[in-house]
Amino acid sequence: MQTFTSERAVDLAVVERSGFVESRHRGSAVVLDPDGRTVAALGDVVAPIFPRSTLKPFQAIAAMKAGVPLRGAQVAIAAASHTGAAEHLAAVRSILAAAGLDEDALRCPPDWPEDEDTRTELVREGRGRQRICMNCSGKHAAFLWACTENGWPTAAYLDPEHPLQRTVLETVAEFAGEPVAHVGVDGCGAPLAAISLTGLARAYSTLGRAAGNLDADARAATVAQCMLDYPEYVQGRGKYNTVVMEELDVVAKLGAEGVLALGTRDGWAVALKVLDGGSRANALIGLSLLAHAGAVPDAAAAAVLDRVVRPVMGGSEPVGRLRLAEPVVELLGPERAAALGQA
Image 1: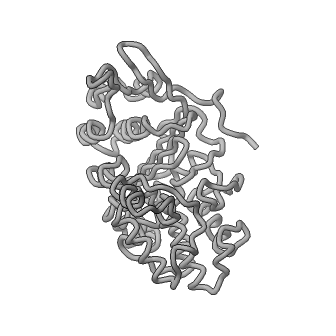
Image 2 (image 1 turned 30 degrees about the vertical axis):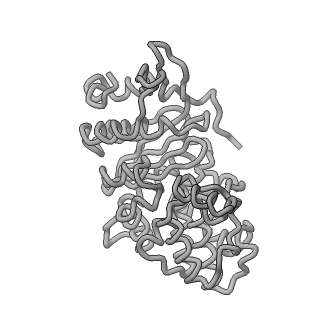
């Protein structure tokens, strides 16, 4: 099987400190237009990758195919990599309650929440890591509800041969428009499909176009619109996925190990993978490519980037910046690069 390697990657972004390039983020990225045509490609965009949590919206769609009547914030939390804030945990608990289960049924690993208030409360109460605080707990709760709706075994819901997981893999292949190349295990313990970056972008083109579209697949439309209506549940208040959805009305979902996927209501899509597994450059790369395609206005993308891309600090003063690497700047052209603050 062809795999994603450094030989087929390009520089996407660099970290500059005191006039010195300190780090380089290499990877691949692809932009698809609403007709599914590749309008920009950097690096290898056909080798399989593990999309990680960018697949969560399609896992939520699969749970809904299995009869789970998710609504509102429940949909968003099922597609989320949440921070464990109180509102996130309440949404997960509402799904478990509807399934007639408690937190002990979750099979995601116990974890500390990213949210500081929740973590402080756990420490104050003398409690340790909790399964419900793991960022994938919403997805797992939706999986469990699918099991109780169908009389499927709950203890084995992460088995790749479980009826639900077979539905998940079929759904991913359907939206990606290509067969699943490999099945592994995600960090949360769930089966994980490998597809190409082009397939991932194809899936997000369909997902983004489904938002508010009465002619689209009803489940995809529900997931996309709820992600946009409840963006604070998809990641967390002030987090870059949430900010992108709030400010640009673009479906945005991160994945571990440097993956990001974006889809617009018009069907434009970007998918990218940073080879070193870091995500600090993802918003910069992804939004710059959407702007290059004309899918979002330059000024709007620049305003969001000003909020979510942090300067490189030396003590308490900025001494550098995260910036796009030359292959991306060349693709953008001088005028757009300048408009995005990348000249």
